[in-house]
Structures are given as C-alpha cells and as structure tokens.
Amino acid sequence: MRFGSAEIYEVVQQLPYIEDTICVGQRRERDTDESVVLFVKMVSNQKLTSAMKQDIRDRIRQARSPRHVPRYIFQVPEIPYTINGKKIEIAVKQIISGQAITPSGAVANPECFSHYKEYVEIERREAEEAKAKL
Image (spheres, rainbow, N blue to C red):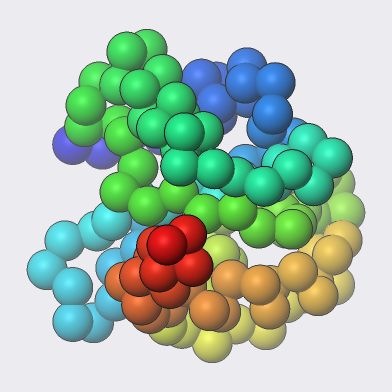
C-alpha cells in the first residue's frame, strides 16, 4: 500500500510533544520490502519515551489505518530542510538506505544529515535503544 508522508504528518503534528517530523521509507539492497521510518524532533528537547511511541502508533492507526503505522520511530535532534523551507525526505531516505549523498547548496542545514547515517543498520539501532531502557 502506498501513501504519502503528509498523511502521517497531519496526525503526528497535532501531538503537543512533537516539534517536527520526517517520515521516509527504508529499503536497502538486502531488504525484500520497504520499512516506514518516522523521525521526530521533540519540543524543548524532551526525551521520546516508549509511551509516546505507542501514542504515536495508536493515533496513526486510529486516524489512518494499521498499514500507515511506521515500523520504526526514532528521535533526532534536527530535521533537514531546503532554504525554501521544504523537508528533504529523498536525501534522508537515501542515507538510511545506505546510499551516499552530496548535499546541494539548497540545503539549509546540511550538517544534520550526519544524524541519519546511524540508521542504515536500523535493527541494531533499535536494539541499542531497547537495551538502554533496561
């Protein structure tokens, strides 16, 4: 099922603890299917909790459908934008799918791309976060 990231943004941006989000698909060479990944920037640098992740999933499921619920949700310190104020989904998708990118001069905050490189091995990243909570 294909759907646009705007459908996710419309639901998640209503949450008081979310400042910003970017939602992309991840498909690496070894993957047989694409996984939806939601990155969130929290209001006032709050910590994204398991309860908040479940709230996000529940609200998306209720407002859209179970198929819209992201497989992964992670907190990031910054969301990449163009100098014209558009989210840069394609570059984030390429980065987390293991592709190298060269930011153009149209990127307002190119340094933030480094945050997304650690999500190429997303299963390991998820396991590290789960272990840290124990």
